[in-house]
Image (cartoon, rainbow, N blue to C red; front, side, top):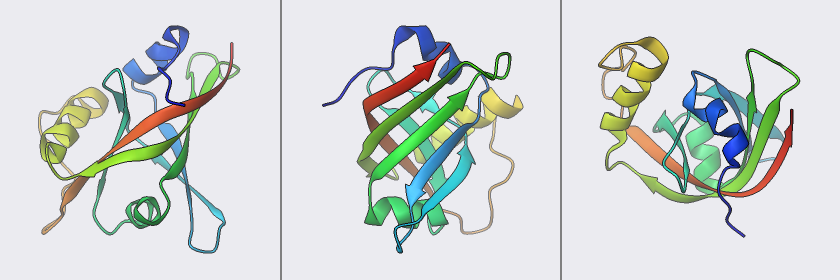
Length: 132
């Protein structure tokens, strides 16, 4: 059942906190990647490039877990479990620029590679674990 991020922990997404994104590899083992995150009030947004491991994993198995640890208090955290609801290219370029502004203070994402195609994943939160 879809849920909203608890208000007490919204600051962890609004701050420049990296999230650990856990996905499932083809053999069933976990794979974790640090990612920039955003929240639109319904979905946790994760932006990546086509062909990266997390993109391949999420296309095959949309189950995810995201872990946010407060950099000011490592005993305060939020884990969000959910499923990919949307995978789209629409708005992905604008979104990665928005994330570059948030995390790097730059208007344009500076790490784009030639031929890179950005993908925006919208994760529907379904369950939370938290402390602090």
